[in-house]
Image 1 (cartoon, one colour):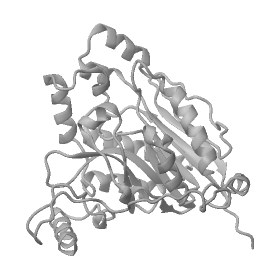
Image 2 (cartoon, one colour):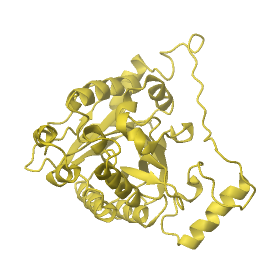
Image 3 (cartoon, helix red, strand yellow):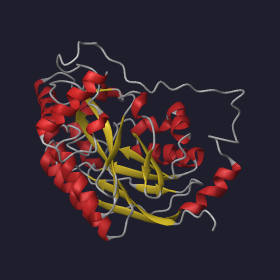
Length: 359
């Protein structure tokens, strides 16, 4: 019997968060998961920072005035701990819908009060949390609220159809990150995007250029999941008339799409009254093989005698403390408990203490 990969259905979400409301954004994500599952999709990708919101206010507001700081504090208050009740709800939805999901969220470490990551959470069709990817380098204003991830989350994850990967916004254009992800031979990659970048950049042009090149370079299907700017978010930013005109022009526009390994756009633009919905494509995974046979940049179509790339897959620690003396202020939350979203808080604390004692 030959090694055939078969066909699957991909789903790209184009939607707005329920701005800075974790519980409501989780509920909205679960609705999309169930909708895609009923449509027969195997994989669904969500926009950047979908839960509870992406801090795009830093693109259009002063960095440290009271409104900006208030929005940032609310972002932390509604950020997601992995694992937690929020991730357990997402996992249950994936299991019920029998679908694998990559959910963009703002992550905070448990039992801390300051540091956040721009994260993609990978959840299997059986409800197991497969892992997470933390954006390596926050872009422009994101740096004021997000720290960068490390090489320990730059990888692909196993899905029923094969390897699944993801990166966030402009890191999808990072050639070294792309080369690293390509070495895992993903069949599907989820590129997560916000609703807009700035008055000086047209997001649709960037998504098209970056994701089509990414699909060709990595030789895989790319799900472009994109945010939508709604009126509630515009009102929350409390901007002046000139900026409001730009935001109103960008309102209810989305740029979700699905790209083939040859760089062809497989989907029509999604146009709805509020800009929200799901873009679908049925894809043949065996179609990946011909592009890979021609230009496998992770294998025969490269020159390891000329090029080499070293990736540091460990996460640094700011403080090395005695065992059981409290939480490390910089090390990320242990992934060991990531698949146990239904555990009680006491059980999660036991897991965290065990992880610290082993470090």
